[in-house]
Length: 264
Image (cartoon, rainbow, N blue to C red; front, side, top):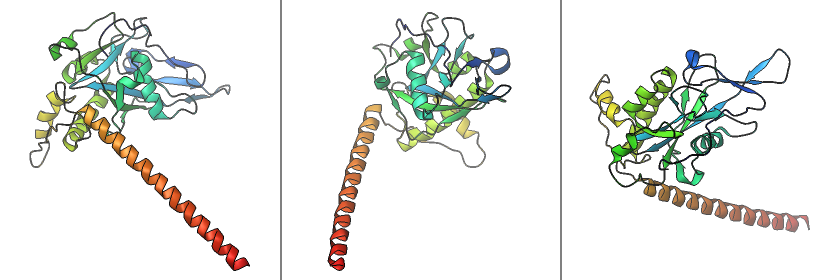
């Protein structure tokens, strides 16, 4: 996930039929997509999904090299008919950033955040984490923008400035930042490669809350250990399901044999 030549344009996607992006003047950078329901005189909004890729205390924002929208925005697209929103969010992160799916890991314990735009379908924003470390050298090197690249990395303060014209996306990122801070303290969000996205703001923001001063442990989870824990849990769950199935089959066999004895 280092910078380079990304061949795929972050373009618009269909949602059943034609999708129409609204201008940034009304709803920020390219928010809002509507789909024709197929009935004359009726329109039906389609659900949308976004994927926020994180690496340390930075996130990915995308630009349109074809000029479809101005400035940067969060990767999102319309959910295709029959597609699960979570799957669509991974597709948004992968396709719009030209990043292979195996290069990112869904943070399953971080609930999706809604980018709520008045009069438009909500965008369910899921959090993903980069599997590979940043390139060698200073982490700040990632802060240099490349206008000829599809995406760039942004710290929370930089993302707030880059999304200055999109209040709804900024509000969603603020919500996500709080969730990530809580997740890091609980060990469900990595704290590495510079920290946790939003840390420049959440640490001070927590102290402004009413009541006792709120301070959260920053945590020390890495993406590698998080993925290992997830794999172990999945393996254990699979084993438990297999054991349950075997037990149910055995009980069913015993029941059939008993019924046969009673019948005779």
